[in-house]
Image (cartoon, rainbow, N blue to C red):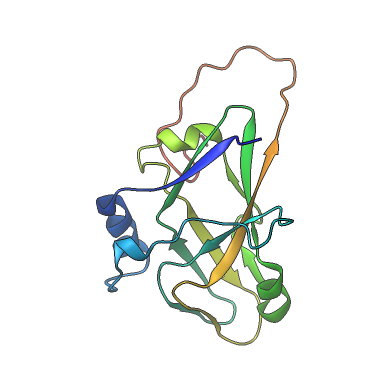
Length: 161
């Protein structure tokens, strides 16, 4: 069953976020890779870094992926570190688990998936351009009985307080 579709954000949005988060680095927009499953039995979609970065021990960095995801209502995309990076570098996500809601696709930043990475280890974590660094899993969720919510998302991180 297919419930989502990955797309690139616009080149303008990608370069704007890249510049504000990483700085002036040379990146070819066409080199952004769509998330894919490594094997037919893989549950997670691997996200590749569009840029080479070094994260020093006990430091963090937000990495713009260049990717957005159109997700059917009732499903969520959860992001986790790739296991190997967690074991080797104690890499984690700044927010522990990244939650991409279906309405994030329509956010003011085009739903650009930006991943906050922290290196809790004692050696530099090098993520090269094209390296798989996080994986995303789609899951269905359910709602509690509640009043109807008509609030709409506009921003990204922390936009709903």
